[in-house]
Image (tube, rainbow, N blue to C red):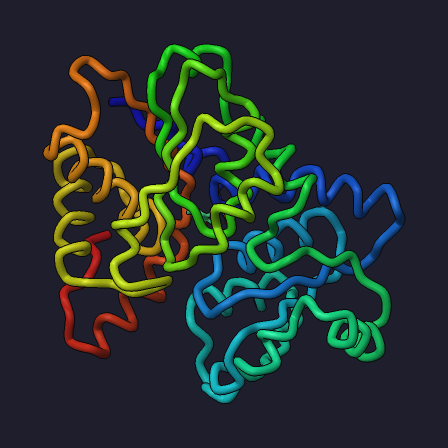
Length: 282
Ligand SMILES: *Cc1c(COP(=O)(O)O)cnc(C)c1O
């Protein structure tokens, strides 16, 4: 098994989020946009990435954040604090409003409030993001039989699917519950040698169990590679479990994509500490 360290390609814009923003930033510049607006939750890697990418590329950035209560807390969590330090304007909205974020009316209201902007969807997935993720695979990655990656909105795996060869099998490990993912990926993927392994979301997006923390800490001690608890930790937990269960034929060559997400650890640890649960070792 080999691990592709996409977490190391950039110090602040974590792994796949860098790939997903690359062509969107280019497009935003080409059309003369001055502001990037996007959506995300409290620990969102995408929010952190957009804030930083906006700063270094000269865009104003607006982050519309799920959960009004987060704005009332005097102290922002490390992800949101980082975004704010990069100059991102944070706009906190209720969970009910957040659900409407793709509606025309809601986008119209945002334009009335903030003026014109280049819209990046939650998680950053669109056609240009998938194009960026097609660059994750390189020629020597075609020797692998299986390529495994974590799935949130499906943009990253779609790029990997498109760039892969037919003799390979791409396995996605969703970090959340959701039957919509299959269809979402089909919208962007142009080949069908892939599958979703839906047994390792640990109860849903952002849900964390002590056994996951134990696995992440053990993995770090043995391989000296940090994993995040939202995406890559769950995926590698699944890969190891499948290996143990004999899922992969003997002598299969596995490539695992480390998509990054390590910036989220500090915020998750603060939450675990409040709940008196074991922490991720850093
Ligand atoms: C966002 C993210 C994912 C999921 O990517 P999608 O393109 O939304 O499926 C996986 N891993 C990490 C670390 C992420 O930050």
